[in-house]
Amino acid sequence: MKYIKTLILLFSVCIFFAKSYAQEIPDENPINTDVDLSQTIEGSDINIASFSGCFWDSFDFKDCLDEVELKEGYQFYIDETTGDLMYGKPDGSASDAQRLSCVHFCPVLNAAGVIKAQSTIWSDDVSAEMPDFIKEAYSVSSTQTNLFLTAEAGKWLPKESYVYKTDVYNYSDGLPIYISGIFKDFTFFNWAYPSANNTNKWIQSSEVNLYSPNGIPLSDENALGINSVSKFGYGRNLPYAVASNATYNSILFEGFENYTTSTGLYACDCFDEMTLNLSAYFATVNPDPATTLNTENSHSGKQSLAIDMSGASTSGFPFRVAGMGELNILSYGTSTTRNISQQMLDKGISIKAWVKSSDENLKLMLYEPLGKYIKSAYPAFEKIARTGEWTLYEVKITSNDWTSLASSVISSGIAAELGLKILFQGDASAKVYLDDIRMQPLDAQMMAYVYDPETWRLVAQFDDQNFATFYQYNQEGQLTRNIIETERGAKTLAEKQYHIPTQKRD
Image (cartoon, helix red, strand yellow):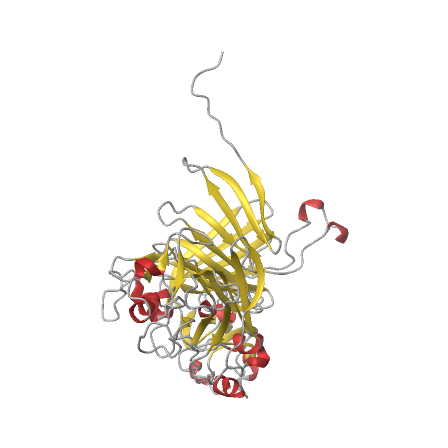
């Protein structure tokens, strides 16, 4: 695998230093060790220096003797710049010093006067870690031999970031003030063998573990092991869901604005498996998308999903009876399959949605078609709050609500497919609309965003509890009003009026 490495140092004299180059990294992992070569050859009178370093795999130092011509006054030593084992005079004065290939040690480079240091490893091999659904979204071909044509090679992106941590000199140490703040020790980052770095000094601050083909970071992990994810839609240009302490496929948000009909079917214009399968919904429940994506009723944006409560006869939906509507959140056994993660099992999940209904007695229930992983057959949604005609519903699946089968399947390393439906029980003639639905682990935090699909203006921002801050604009695109939702209703936070004189005043 090829990497580019970048090192940035800031010295006390404010000199900026950068080093960047490409190098092949071997597959082997180095072994940090203290080596005393004088004890390696028993009974030898050869002057062999003791040194510290790291080398690859185990080796027999006697093999190194086959490469050298023994000379008086010569000894073995390490070239600290390259990490090569040398045979000659340690001061480097011997012009015939031999560079040996029997073993390779880690080079050790030091510097003084450093006040800050950070390193970044770049990679052009991010496509290897892309899930298939992202490759398919960008038509990345698995059979294309020229990876530069598919932008899978030649595009260098930050992969890992490191910072150097050590003690610094203080004025209280009795040193001149101009020395205060510099590192007491510093060792350069080992580019050739990153795993040989002292992990107590070079601290990995972040790692991007998922990129989109156009270079957008979708998932990264910080120094504490907390994962953050971002999902992009609206032509794969705008973030519509950003979460911390969550994996990419453990969150879902849908505001029903992020859809395209370019193929004749409604599909999310994003790189994400975690979306509602509306094309299948229209094909089996309501064949007319124009009446299902309702433009007259919406909690945010311009559209909501109309739920059919008539009970029209269709195949594949067991609850199609009068007064019962349904919506697939997660389909099992399809391209939208979702597997239960260990985080979902340990912490549970939350599903929230805004619903508008003409039936005040409408009930919402969660249903798992497979009936294997959730103990309760029909967990009920609770009403959390109401603002205007819209009511916020929530259902929680805690760690105690999973069956023992879910735990045993996941612990065995087998994927546990999770299918979920929302059931709407009420009057068959009721008008029911659903908008701004989300799913996330209970210990995750997620922000969601809804945009105008034509202007890309932000129209709503949802907090972790799925309450929105609405942004209203005038015809010139200027922000005029901020409205926030709370459990006590909607409140206006700020309002602006603009006036530009049409003629010059005296």
